[in-house]
Structure formats: structure tokens, C-alpha cells
Image (cartoon, rainbow, N blue to C red; front, side):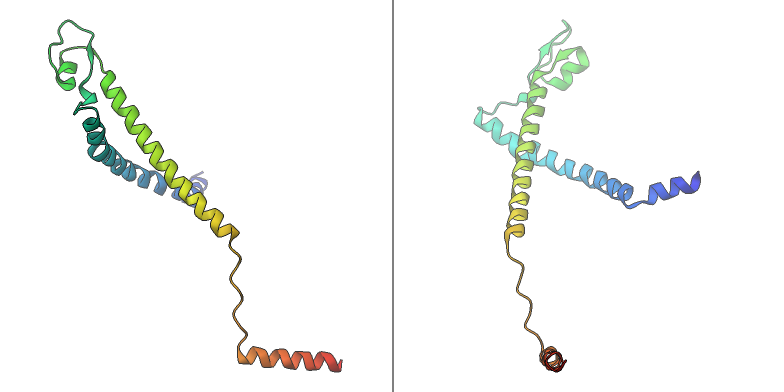
Length: 140
């Protein structure tokens, strides 16, 4: 059983999947930073400097704070602003990935429709060999 597990774990697909997951996690951090640090401030500026992440409705009478983090410490809150921020982040990431996949597909279609490159001209030696072949074929 140990040998079977080793064969399974070392197979190319499992290793490729593991590498993909690790790279995906690292790329996820980059995308999160791009969205939260670059795009969301622009969205906030368009909407008059609003920060959606601090929009909430207190569900407990004890909540008196204005920031979401402090309000969560005091009691239950309905954090619809944080949800809106996550939805906007998702839409931005989905749009960027759509554009990337569309570009890759366009390059694949272009590569598939291009004619293959012309074969290189035969060398002098190949030309001589072809002449010899043709002369032998005529004599046969």
C-alpha cells in the first residue's frame, strides 16, 4: 500500500496540481492587493470617497461604534458593506480573468490559422543526393 501511495503522490498530475495550488494561492494574494489597494480606492473616489467596508447595521443594542471591526467586538452586525466590497472585488477579478482568457484564446486561434512555415531549402548535399536518387530511378 505504501508503494501504491508513493506512485500516486509522485505522478505528474498530482505534482502539477500541487504546484498549481501553491502558485494560485500566491497569485491570489497579488490579485487581492491589486483589487483592494488599486481598484477599490478608485471605486471609492468615484462614489465620493465612500468606504463600503464600514457600512453595517447593528443587530445588537450594545453596538455604538462606527467602524466595522470595533462594532463586531461589541456585538452582532449585519456587514452589508463588507459584502459589497467582496462582490465588487469578485467582479473586478472575474472581468480581468475574462480579458486574459479572451486574449489567450485569440492567440491560440491565430496560431491555429497561420500556415506552417515553409520547409528550409535543401542543402547542397541533399540536392546532390536527390539528383543521384532521380538518376538511379530513371535507370531502373
